[in-house]
Structures are given as structure tokens and as C-alpha cells.
Image: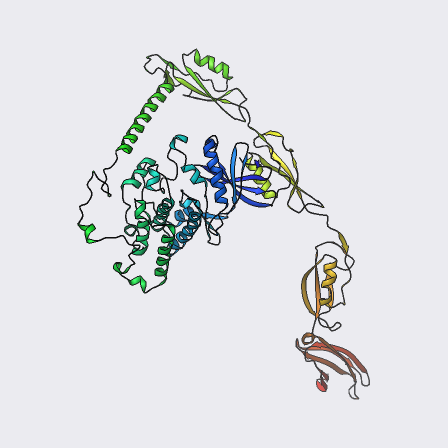
Length: 625
């Protein structure tokens, strides 16, 4: 089924699950460009006309259901001999997965989940549709915690078939009701029983009945009472335990009248769990509509003997006789198989099996036949052994066997050939998945500009479909990079306010990059001082342009001119100019002069600026800017 396209619309991508009656795949809906789940009926059920008619009718009925706790069904169809249902694709896990991971689930969570399942069943029952296969495997939990019931419709059609259709017990034996085990007509109360089993498993981490064979489990559903859940999990309140046991009553008449009544009791249990005061109520305080009816009259009645069941009717021995007959038939079948496998085992003559591995099949047959041995041939694909040659043999070469023993030869069919799937138009991920599902490998991946194709979409492949190639052949892909990117000569943004360039950047299909601030007293605050890339550079669409903008006053640089005339006095006088600002105190001028010299010096600083002039160490001038 993998890589097959149903009705030229639904392309099967991967197998995600399945059961006794159908397999479930994830597929791509070409028309609506979305992922869907495809449930495909298995081939052994497709040749019974009555069964197919029921399948269609029940699937179409299920498609009419619309409930937030039911998986939506979008389409029902047939492609050649393949009958399928298109459903909503749920990304999450099954309830069975969660039980396996956590063993037992909290009581509050269990009641909430069962309540949502029950509400889905209520909607189905109101539309005259019985699920018939409620089990944790058919309950999906989305990533947001929403409960979704699936497999509506198929189970109803399956249970209408007799055991002659498959030769096996239909349904999920751990969860089906006693009436299903007896092959009787099912009803809405069968769903109630199965829901009780699911609730039992969630609370205890185990199913109520287990055994080595499906028949032994079915007999327990008919004859044995389940172990009380509180014995396995003492944290279960008696009220919740009573709900489970009432749902699992052997006789349908002893169960809830309908699923609506069970919902009412589940909500009662939910309210009880939310009320801390109610938790302290004794067993006698619980409402009687959900507790088993135990009266003095019942307690004084004699218990049923081994020859009677709980309802007082003699036990039927037909099931035991049928089981013994089936066991006898299996023994006979095993004996016949042994005879066919070993031939005339009473023969006293023995031979040593010749080595025929690698030989052409006709030659191998002649060699073994000449040894008075029989030959059975099966075929298999093999890349290393030429077609028509023996891959392996059993018994192996050198073994001593009796004459007429059957020697099984596995003969090569050559390298397995497959059809190259058409992955053009798919995303790279889905294309790789289809290639893998076809038994092929991913080869080189190139990217090309494609004006009309979105990025990451396959636009070419080699070999091209529908070529026939050997398994593990590499498939090369060409992936779209999207349309070509236009080159742009970058304008000069320097001197412009930063808040005015966004519109210009958008029109050029450029992006605003990193913006940093820098102290600058030449430009007003927020003005672009520099840009990267530089003006007149060639860039492509989508390039991010970084800007440096001026920062406002606290860190601005202050400048001043100091002028001084050296006074009369010594012939050599040392003039010093000292500046003090936010960066500290420093000497910016220190030179000797003679009287009458004029000194002019530009000074600068950050923050509060103080200037001091010293002549021969004496302060002669001071000013603060």
C-alpha cells in the first residue's frame, strides 16, 4: 500500500497502526493539501459481497456522526479491490500507549477520559450505531488532551459476519462482552461492558481477564467474576469501583440501562472526587443507583454450585466440547504436517544431504532427487545471488536424514524490483518518506531557483517515474529554492532619522538589522551615523541592514579653546593645562615659554569639563564648562 495513490487523490505515506480487520496509514490529500488517516480493509474481507455492503453502509453511517470526541470521517471509497475510509489525522497517542507508559492512571483522569468516551458513545447510540470494539487501542488522545474515539462502523460490519469468514474469533477478546463471546447479537449494552473493561484497566494497569489462548479468555468473560479493582488499587473510591462492576455485569439486564445513565453516574463520581468532604463518606453513604444491590434476601440465598452459574441455569458444555474438538483437530493437523515434512519417516535408509547452495535450481533438484530425497522450493529476492540459483537449503548440507525427507530450497528471484514513486510536488520530507517506503534510498539533493514553485518542494527526480529499478537504488532529487532574488544597490541612509527608513527598506524588500548607539555631537539623537553594508553596495532581497545612530547629550563631547599670555618674570616659565571630566584628571599641555609668549590650546572632555592653567606650578586660571 505504501506510495499507492487512491482515486488519484490520497497518496499513502506511512503505516501508523492497524488491527484484525484493517490497517491505518497516514496519507497526503492532494486536493486539499492536508494529512489524513486512511483505514484500509484487509484483503480477506473484500470478497464477501454481503460483508462489503455492510461495510459501506456502516462506514457511511459513521460518517454522519459529528461529535468533538469522535474522529471525523471525511470520505468512503473503493479503488479496485481496496475499500477504504478517509478520516481525520490525529497527532498524539493511543490510550493503550498511555496505560503502558504509566501502568495505572489517576482516578480523576480515568473518570474524565471514560466520561468523554461515554459521551461519544451516547451520540453514536442515538444514531443507532453500536461501536462493538471499544478498547484502549481505539481511543486516541491528542497533544492537547482531547479524547477521540475511532473505528466506528467497521466493527459493526465485522461482528455481523460469522466465524466462517475468518475461522477465528472476531473482535478484541480482552474487551468484548459475554454476548459477543457467545456469538449472540450485540447491542448498545455491549459497548457499556467494553467501556467498563477499559476503565478497569486504566485504574488497575491490567485487564480483568487474561489467558494463554483467546478461547480461555472468552470463557472467563462468560463464567468468572473479575477481581475487585480496589484489591489491586486501594486508592479507588468505592463509588468508582461500583461503576466499573455495574458496567461489567455478565447479564446485559444487570448493567446500566443505557450509556446516558452511566454518564450520569460518572458525573456523580467526578463531583465526588472534586469534593474533599464527600471523600470521607462511608460505603453506606454512596447513592444506591450505582452500588450493587445487596439485600438480606440475596445474602441468605444459597450460593450457586459448580453445576450452576450465577443465574441458576445449568452451564452449557458445548464450549468445552468445541474446545476439545479444536485441540484434537490441531493434533491431527500437526501429525499430517510432520508426515509431509519428513516423508517416509519409517524408512531405515539414510543419506547425507548434498550441498546445492549456489547451484542452478534444476541441477540442485536432480542432485537431491538422485539421493531419493524430495524437494520443496520457495522463492525470495536476493541482490547477491543470480536469479534461478539456490540461496539456502534446509536441512543444511552434510546433515544425515532418512530417504524421502523433504529438502526445502530457497531460490533467488534476483534483485527485487520496484517502481520509482513520483515525488514531484511533495515537500522534501514527504518525498524522502515515499522513497524509503518504496525500498529505495535518497541520493544527491540539489537546489534550483524556480519562479513558480515554493521553496522545499521537489521539482525533479532521477530516475524518473514510473521506472522499474532494483531495491536500494539511489533517487536524486532537485528541490526548489523559490524565485530568483533581485540584486539591489544600497542607498546612503547616513544623516537620516532611523524612524524614517523602515518604509524605504520595505519597498526595497530589505530588512532592518542590528541597531547600535554611539555618542556623537555632530548629529541629533536617533540620526544614522553609519550603515553596514556600506552605501552603493550590491545586496539581494531580504538582506538585513545594520545601523549605528547618534546618542543624546549625557555622553556628548565638549570642546573649548584655552588662551593665555605668559607674564613678565623669569626667562623660562613652564605652562601646564590640566583637564578634569568624566574620564578623570589629565595634563593636556606641558611646555616651557619666555615672558610675552601667547599659548592657545583646544581642549575636550565628556560630562562636566573643568580646565586649570598652571605657570611654574602656580594656578593662574580655572574654568568649568
